[in-house]
Image 1: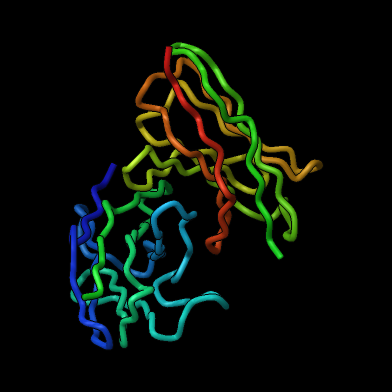
Image 2: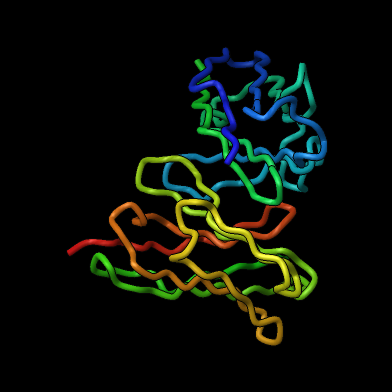
Length: 109
Length: 113
């Protein structure tokens, strides 16, 4: 199965902007991979932020957005808050199977 | 409101079996693909298996192929995961999920002697 890659860790300043990316070992990520982004805080169930590249849920804070960028899926956080410190996972659909990335630990500092 | 409630987790010996269930409500269950995702303690998320709305299409992760069986009962709005020949590497919280991105609370499976 394909490997999905994410930055292991990133740091953003409060109020700052950061972009997390999600790549595939099989080639460029497209909308056909239906990229998902999840946020997980310690001890909590993962929460879906973005689905199908750039669609948000009713509970997704407006400061989060999804896109395709340079052959990867991207999650942009604009105006980071301390509560955004968490692990972020992307998910791609590849040949009918689902593959998670290894996660990005985002620190707000 | 979509609700997914997993059950059936617990402690099982290596080589043993367990059947997980997921009760779904707040959605037209029979029209949705369903997935199982797991997370080992301190580790990342791993997709396990998925099943099409009518059960006609099933996919598994390589790590569980031949040992796990996903199934569903659309009349009861239930999703299942039969897990056989369990090993320590299967120890994890197992989540039931449905698109676009709803998750259950998870059920813990511990494989240990």
